[in-house]
Image (tube, rainbow, N blue to C red; front, side, top):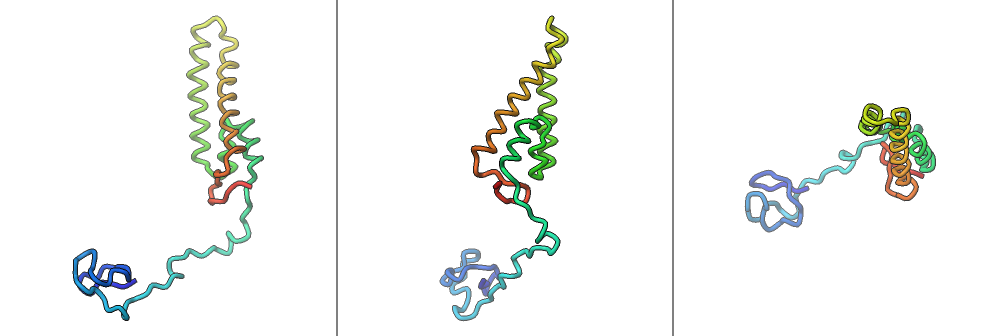
Length: 146
């Protein structure tokens, strides 16, 4: 990209009449300006990563989310370990908020954990349908699910 003769800022070649940074008229000669090598800005693929790439399957992510989504296993499968831990912790908090009051303050204390687990399982099942109906889900490396 060309640079302004006055302030030295990089400007586009379309700003040949006036510099947008300092207001200098005719900031560069139209025939003389520096170009940048495009290959300097491209990150090359490492040799180790070239052959270790597998596309994740949408159906497997759906099954993991449907049956084990409470534990965040779908997030672990896609490479999002931190999000999987958050999902597990949120499930544990919701389970506790529902189950503990039922256990201590009602006569149905035997069924309190079944009710809490059922609510969490139903929420996890509903969230799992995102993997089936959405085409925009990506894994950690940025590849769409197959």
